[in-house]
Image: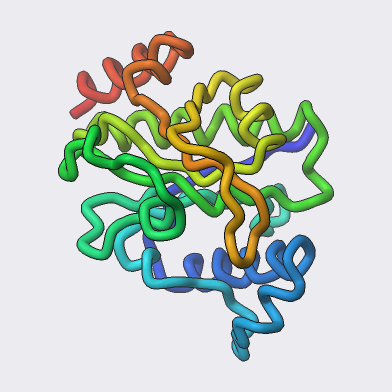
Amino acid sequence: MINFKFLEVTNEKLLTRVFSFRYKIFKEIYPMYMQESGFSDEKEYDKYDAYAVHFVALNEKGEVCATVRLIYHSPIGYPTENNTKFDNSMFERNKVGEMSRIFVDKKYRSMKTTKIIIEAVKRYMYVKMIHEGIEYTYGYLEKSFLRLLRIYKMPYHPIGKIQKHKNFGLRYPCILYTQELGNENPQLIKLWEQSRKIQ
């Protein structure tokens, strides 16, 4: 069994490795996008990274094998808002965020291993969302990934029609309710309660 180490990215050196990992994954799945984007330093990043907290999974060798980011309190909006059409008036601006760049290295994409990683993502994200007062989280998801996340008890809901992104194909604008995430995963509520006691 692989022993992953999960942690929040708190220094520039590790963040640079995250961007390099994202570049590698994007090059595998969207080579034309990477070619057109012209990331000459072989790192993938965008304007939303400045308003995001990043999490990473490392394997036994310390190699980056999975990443995710949570964007919140973004003055420039969110990727889902800025790339799709839906009614966002139902969400309070100071209570919304977006989870994105959920990437897993291809050698760890078995159902069993991916589940381990997604379970860790849920733990870190839920505590962070509760702490920051984020009640709903956008996602811009392919149909197959939306189905997979639901299997792993991350109950995203489409909030608009499936739409074609100029770079990434057909995707649904979706929302994840923090309260529902906790209800689907009672262990997350216990984890939050324990973290409050430690504080």
